[in-house]
Image: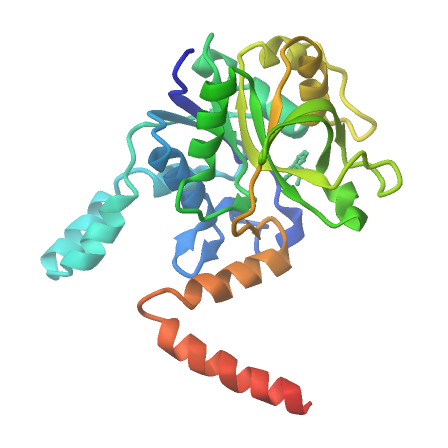
Length: 293
Ligand code: G1P
């Protein structure tokens, strides 16, 4: 079994759900309290044992590269002022094992992943989507890597979703339960209507995939919206290289939309050493006021 060493993080999306904030700023740089959302995902990959990361960027995404690079003038400034803790924070996101490639046209997630072929080569690899922040004692990517190693099959992370939300997710048609939280996959359907959803198991943004996915993506026709869907490629892959779905039941923040971003800020703010106490008091008071209203 080949070890998973590489991860791909697509970050080329336009982020239109956050306009006007994303008019001149990468959506991946939107902070949860004081941390850009993409940093959570990079940290999950590193905590899972990933050695090299490729971020798929695009026009207007330079801030992501700057964030993971050194900022020498900032460092000098903080050093001169003796602000050691802040200096440490600034330096902590300087990560040389991150590589970048651009997706020239916004042709969907499948096309974004295809840009990673040269970086990945002939190895299995992990994919982490930046819209999902899933803090967990065992990082979710690590759990998927373990499932891949145990079963020798590509793995996608899933959660139980309310059926009426099927059209926001790739949905799994389960073939067989291999373990309590691992299911073999019969089919994968991208964003079905609730009536057509084969189950309530929706894909969340973590995958471990074999390199065969690239040939499929290269030959795939875009859908009606001119996007190459990763889920459609996985459906084809699954016919020749069967995959499994791993069921995750931990915390998930969907920071790809406003509500999820707000919830993430509140909950992470409740744990942050500089804000937790004030936040708790504020929320208690707010709850009281809302009860009265
Ligand atoms: C993408 C995938 C979808 C998956 C979702 C998870 O959709 O295409 O299968 O369920 O991520 O967040 P997006 O949310 O980018 O539209």
